[in-house]
Image 1 (cartoon, rainbow, N blue to C red):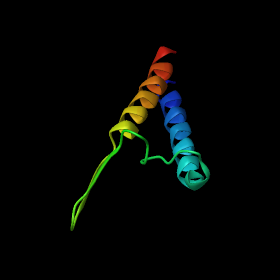
Image 2 (cartoon, rainbow, N blue to C red):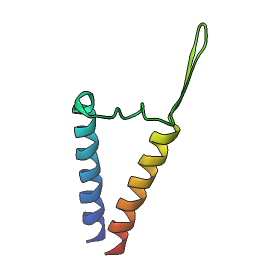
Image 3 (cartoon, rainbow, N blue to C red):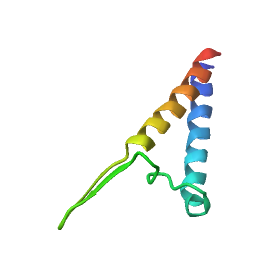
Length: 71
């Protein structure tokens, strides 16, 4: 029974991620290009560190897992 709920939660997360990727250009914010994401552009290289995106993704996944584990 527990594995079924976990699979449903993982499926829901994948559906939401797919929608964000598909509709990403139409959103008012760009996933991966949020304020707080660091980009360093050198002469011959680019270093990108998505700090804010990582924090928001971690928060969302923590809340989802907490809700799934609560039942």
